[in-house]
Amino acid sequence: MTRFFALTMGHVLIAGPKTVASVPEFAFRDRTIDVIRSHEDPKAVLARYPGRRIFVGGGIAVWNVYAPFIQHWDITRLPYDGEADRWFDPAWLVGGPLRS
Image (tube, rainbow, N blue to C red; front, top):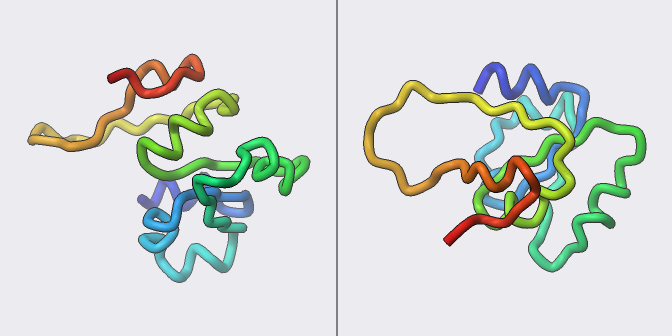
């Protein structure tokens, strides 16, 4: 998480309510953090921050909506070899929704 907070410092982080709830208090001091909701138009959300670098955080629902707008992916591989209930779908790299 140290790298993530260093990357997003001074920029905008948009994420769903669960992700924002997990952000430590210190992170709110040096970046703009915006809770996004499923009913919001992603173009309108992004337009709130003209000229700013925007980072998108969240789960599958967020990625399915915002993947087409991502211009640069910064993907971190975690040193983990156990079971998982979440994964990164390569379809997102080309702006596609999660494959079922």
